[in-house]
Image (cartoon, rainbow, N blue to C red; front, top):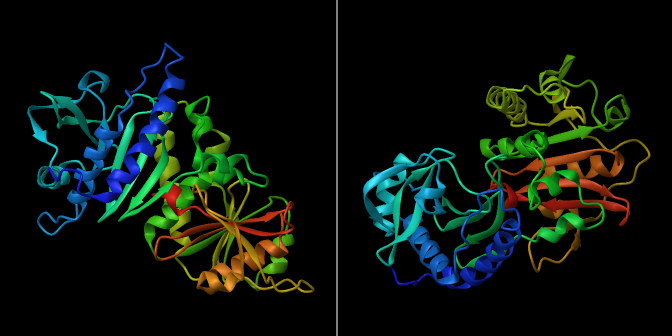
Length: 377
């Protein structure tokens, strides 16, 4: 062990412990559900410290990508139990990483004989379980589990080097908060797994994953007003409209797994189109209209000069900047599109991993840029 030498662990542990203590106490009021145990600050500091140092190692040329979950084997359903627990040391974590790098597999961490150790692997987690993902060297993401029904996670904090970003759950209650942002924040669990699905969230994650950058415009169905802000003719227009995603969302299957797999495949197809130069266009009913479309300022509309930028992080302050300061024509054209088409939303992924949602703010009477990459990690 490194004795908590990583300063980011010392800074993050008390604040993260407070979050989990609050949420787990609230969940325990429902005695009919299995709820996780709340880790204390000392436990969190040890886990974060070990994960950070493991993230800086390379094993056979690969950077470790692992997920650590704090729970005893008794809460893990049908876990894979190691005959001899593995030490919670950076070297040990790096060596076992190749076996657990696939999504949904966690290394279970619990105390044994007075010390934290890795007891095995699990896919099943209790509600509000502490999860720490090693995303990249020096980049850790703290999450909590919504529960077995939804199978989803909520980002709690991002720790990058010596910088801690605590997600501000109150951001979803602010005026003009787009539904996409509310779903990404997701501190309140949905009533059912079907309600937990937000296609735009999945599209955003898939767009970010291909790392080529891209823009997705969501326009009102049944209206062609958006065409006034697109260069005509559109090189890659879709006729008839591709409707498989719309059909999946309109008629969810009773077989959750089959339906989710089909949904994921179609989401990846549409998100892949955003890698083509130009913008991909879908309706708010998820019908694919075009890709590779060029955005142009609508006749008679002024050039967008300023946008409000916010990030759902504690301590973040809204700032007004020129959209050109985002660093690329993709962001500038997306801001112009939303400025001209105020009932549309634009999702923009950068090659460097940043992700911005542009939406018109009636309260501010200007375009609002929501930086949400910390919610997509």
